[in-house]
Image (cartoon, rainbow, N blue to C red):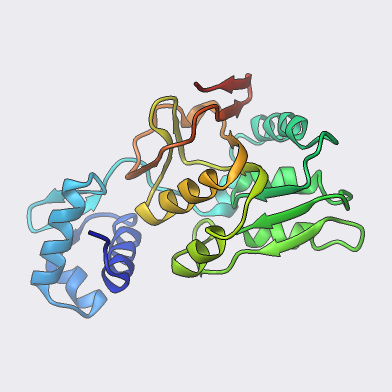
Length: 241
């Protein structure tokens, strides 16, 4: 059964608060202006799905905590430049006309390499991506709307899903907080993972751009990738069967 929008938004807010440390049930209820019984139910279900770790009287975030985009832009910069350069091999002149460029610190570097590509139409959910490509001699840019994440500056939610379900692209270049050859790509929230899974279903070719530090990382949610997806890290291209 699908999670109702109000419940999903509240759980996103809970995860955001838990990235700052452990919180008690009473403190979460007060901050989110809801009942302790509602928070207790949320934490029980979120614990069962692996999103949070229950503590005595409260909870803390499970696994990896996503840092802000500005901080991630500076981390592993050399590896991200190598990955962005390798990604360009998928955007050659061989019939590629439509591209989905995900929000993220590595994909910003790809966008910087596409500023003169008037032959492309680029869909993106990343604010920085759209700003980078909003160039007089650049590609056509279509911004996918939705709720904006304070950390990734990417859009998610019902508006985003509605738009993504209606497009098809030649190539989707996706960022990730974690990568696993069997599971696909990992994200801090179920909503982020669902967005990645949805666009992957609408792309002819799916390429995940993530440096090797993201291999095996524990996160809250996973987006399975379609057969034949590729993962580029600083060591090259890894084709997944």
